[in-house]
Amino acid sequence: MIEVSNLTKKFGSTISLDSVSVSFKEGDHVALMGPNGAGKTTLIRLILGHYNPDSGKVLIDGLNPIKNRVEVLQHISFVPQLPPPIKLSLDELINYVVVSSGVKKQDIYHYAKEMELELIPNLTKSFFKLSGGMKQKLLIAISLAKKSGITIYDEPTANLDPKARENFYRLLQDGRTEKISLFVTHRIDELKKIINRQIYMDLGKIVSDEQV
Image (cartoon, rainbow, N blue to C red):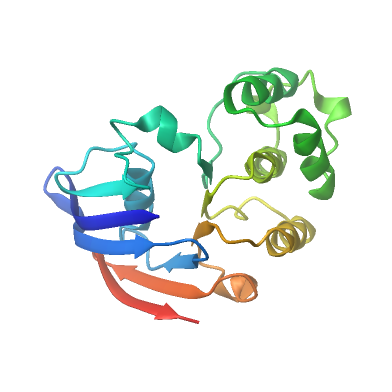
């Protein structure tokens, strides 16, 4: 369970989150929507423990995502909108994930194939030098292979072509279980078969929170 209580985050004089309270439980598949600057990504990054809040708190299954960072992140899969500048080769990156997260290598290969990403010919290539679409396909494959109780996707299909988006949503629907899924998205039509809750944010606040 994710519990967010009276969470506020400022960057200089700008209030990115304004005393937000919300909770997510097992079985919640949630679309987080709103204009740019609404606070969606800030909320996600506070849940991940990337930022310290100015006030309020976040608890993941009762644990603080900053103080208990390693333990919390073991149960979360995250795919950002912009892939990180990782300089490892694909083979090195996959092996790192296998060792650090206990993910099975064959599962990463399975989901990469489902995303129509050819790993074998590209194993020696630097992740950093791949196309945006290839990077995103690999990150999605890793996130699905991890089989986490919480999955968070921040505009995950931004660099994907229509066929890859179709494959991604098919895999999400196939693996839809009693876990928590959060999607920061502007493509709500694509998620209609997956989500059961819509949250709309604006100016650092939750404007609406509806079951669908």
